[in-house]
Amino acid sequence: MREGRHSENHGGPKLINLWDYAHKYHIEEISSMKLHRKGVDNQIITSVLSDFARKHSNRLILYGGQTATPLLLGYKQMRTYTNDLDFVAREQDLPSIIVNENLKFHTTHGVFFGYAMDVIYTVTSGHIHNWEMPDDFFSSSRQLSFDSHLLQVCAPEYTIMMKFRRGVENGRMLFGKDAIDVINLIIAPLFRKQLPPLDIGKTCSLLKTYCGRDILFMAGQIRRQLSHLSKEIRSRATSAIEDFLGHLGETFL
Image (cartoon, rainbow, N blue to C red; front, side, top):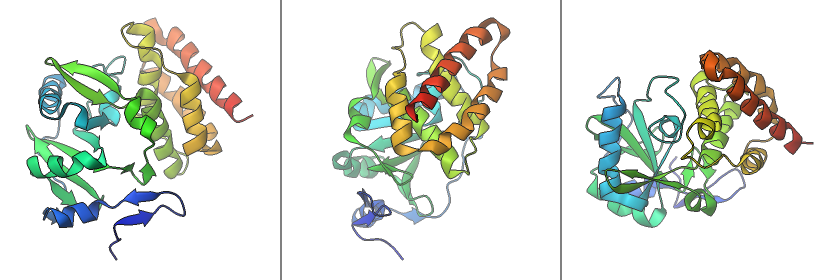
């Protein structure tokens, strides 16, 4: 049964119902998203993001694993580039984006999607996997320049929280790629001096608020992925990770 204008989030805040936008603007509804590219590289992603920055500027915020790459807010390429892009739009900007980009609506995941240079991308609004974004999600986003145009990128504090949140929903098991992304975002400011330091206090506060104590069971899963780091940086990076995990544990005392 389809929901109404808004849906209740298990007694929490009301969530934007994207079905209504799909119906109102006569967006094609389909149940599958096909990958046109099985792999992407730095050059392709740069071209796609440059185009989005030129067309949409501050109307879209990029979130997800792509933000943890060295192209954006990560330290180095520790895994293959994710072959999709995920964006969130403010509700007032959603109609023009879904119409002008000729998007489709995915009925299983409840998001809009399209293709840019054959790279699949999704657009949501108001919530990500039933997590309602606070205003700070938008105001704390980073601005990065792509071909002289600014792209809004999810702050690493929120990306780390969402990676852990998915682990909680996955039975307190972090996906390997998510653990690697967390490491990448934590250590990046140590080696890329142009990046501002991660706000550990804010990150731990977000984790406590939106994930709960279950995340404490996932500390070891983060440590296991440190083997992906080269010996030259492993000691310094491990120290940063242990500092973060220590602060996280203290948050729940």
